[in-house]
Image (cartoon, rainbow, N blue to C red; front, top):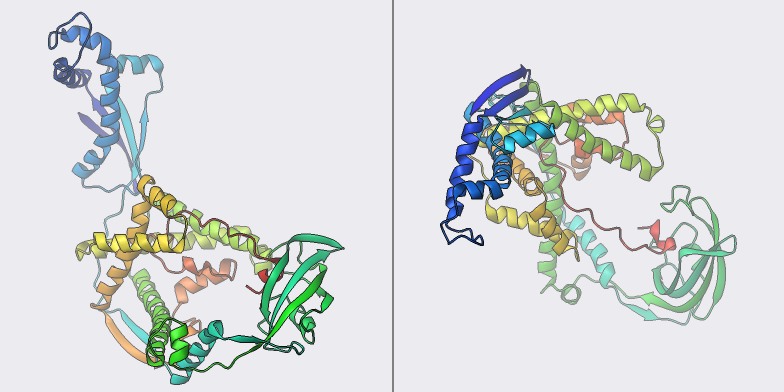
Length: 495
């Protein structure tokens, strides 16, 4: 086999691979000899079929198998021998001339193909001794735990039917039918719907018109759907709802005690407080972690500057750009509404994509040098988390990860990245700082200097922030959740 480098330009490489016809024929003959004792052909005793006859019957099909195997397997071996890693799957090109292909299959011409790819650049790791970060920590007040429990307790609140008129805080059970211009609209009908007045679950003006009604009352209420209502056919439209009140129930008292804990499936009030405190700590901990990680990435970004594989940057840009356009479409806005243009937005997000790829490569190199690995148990837990998020689609998701190339890597990458960050936290200077929850949740421009500016200049103020964390595998390549069943129109806006 002969390998000739025909292109070496920046990170781009192209190799011409030549395998002599005689070598291909030798491999074919080996397979024919191996098949001789196993092939059964009428007119010949087992093991007595002449190789020439086998070659005539099966030579081309065996040669085709050989060609496919070589083209599929040899490029990886060649790159390994060259000490190179391809940024993406190498592109393979072979002759498209039918006559030439026939010669190759007949072992009358050498097998030639080209391998085109971009190499992962060699990265010389730099010292992280100069990286200093601040870990913001929130001390959780007892009042915050109590308030959170009260909100949770609302789901377990008991209601007792009453004969009087409905007031704020009462639960109304009703049938309703929504109409626009006198015509019922899709999703605007429900029976035995329950609504706690004052909860703000329904569109503005709906709940207020139920105050003062009692069981058995009928009423037509008038409302206007918000201009930004998700269902565009209803946005900004005047509508009426025919209401029949079936029950008015008064809310019982909410007390944080063992009885409440039992209703929520917890053994005691103390245990409930412990669980809620843990949940709050987890929420703040996630924010702390994200801000800490951003500081690390921003400083790593300042340490490294090298050419990145164009193919990876373009793929990353497409992911970001798809999300940006989805956000714009859902909000009904344009780039002009966000004080930019599509051209400027593309330029800014291309820079962001390049940053993400570069930092992803740096993190990968750090992890490799530190011998960081993702265990099978960690992968299984990540897969289980995917299954948990999409109930009813477990079979499709498992099939997706089984059949889709690179899907498993999308589970591995975020786990690997977090383990690299954990490793870096043992190598750099970390200072703890107690802050209020408002400070923790606030956008700190000095902390988010690089990534934040990149997102704010360019586009939807909605969270293109996914793009801020510059890391490989950030977007999980999992099946999209099926569109949920349509919610009732009067509940959509609130939810």
